[in-house]
Length: 258
Image (cartoon, rainbow, N blue to C red; front, side, top):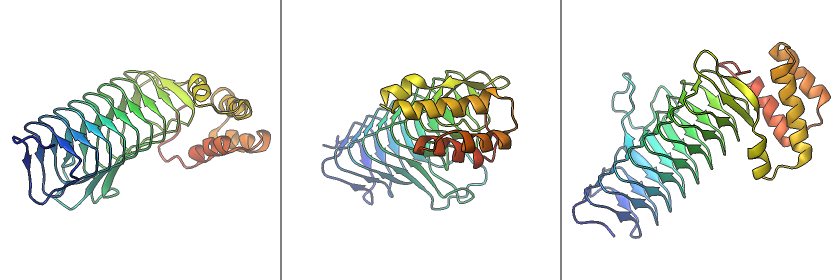
């Protein structure tokens, strides 16, 4: 059902089972999949692809041009998967040609009111961004991370899988998977493993035990980062989660929060 007051460009590709509310504006290059609901006064523009069964609340801004002074109107993308909830006044922007050329959001995410996903960000699956959580450009957020309200993530930073970021935390370095981080710009540091999240996600005790050992080596041993990684490799029985923890640290370009 499309409300008669909605303004939809003839070139937009809208599945017949999409619902569009009053005064919504849909641009020429937009594609929206089956079962998605678009709230009143929402604006969806740019080369934006939205999958199935998403709910976009009123006043959201989806697919606007990047807040990047280098952007010159190039053909770049915003791609959103299935089953996401995007709350009121959230904003998600196109990519840039100086980045990856696209911003991506996976499946089953909750992006709460006033949250911002900037150009060239990549948000995985099952992520929760609480009110006014902000991602600067080129940020990667892995699956099932939770970002507290009012947190701010610096450009080119990565948030690992199953991370819990405390409210109002400023992130300037990569956050290793499965951990908790809190603090302001000067003090943000790891506070432990996200044990509650791991148990709720039904990780086996052997995996949690391995991650505990890896965390202690990283955060509590006082070792240089390269030495800590080598110790993890030699002392901890390998499993997919421990391997990911190690590879995430090894691939960091901005440095790892400890």
